[in-house]
Image 1 (cartoon, rainbow, N blue to C red):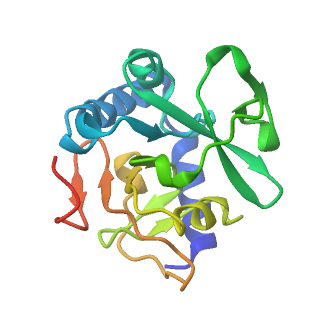
Image 2: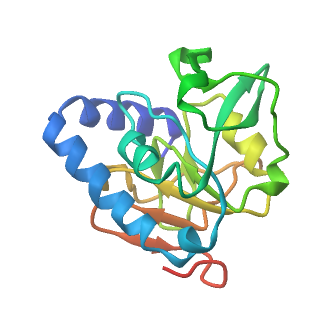
Length: 187
């Protein structure tokens, strides 16, 4: 399926969600993640700070930020920088996403686990993002475990992948766990 068609369908479906459905899905997905061996073993974790239409990371960050080293991305030109999470240093940045401020940019090689937002995923770990390539550029330069998270309906049959697209190691929705690279994932 073409990425633009997927983006359109998923956007329409997200618009129909109630607040209770959004919260229930986030609770379910992040409960699976926090009980995974990959999460338990990782000290340095890159998360996304969720937009209103994305699976919310806010409660998860609040629950774990004092026990794990969380990092958030910040848009810098056409790339993402990685900075430590600090609630008091967040400011609205590119695309109206709260981003960390400051000069403490970290190398992606220090990150062990990345929780990746996406518009859609398929069972082969392919991902459709918002179309700007920020995450693909970042993910191409790391060996960290990559976990795509989303609502059940964000799991689609087949995504037309491109050579620059980076495959997820694991995809977690409310009711499914898709292990793409079994040797890397313990959940």
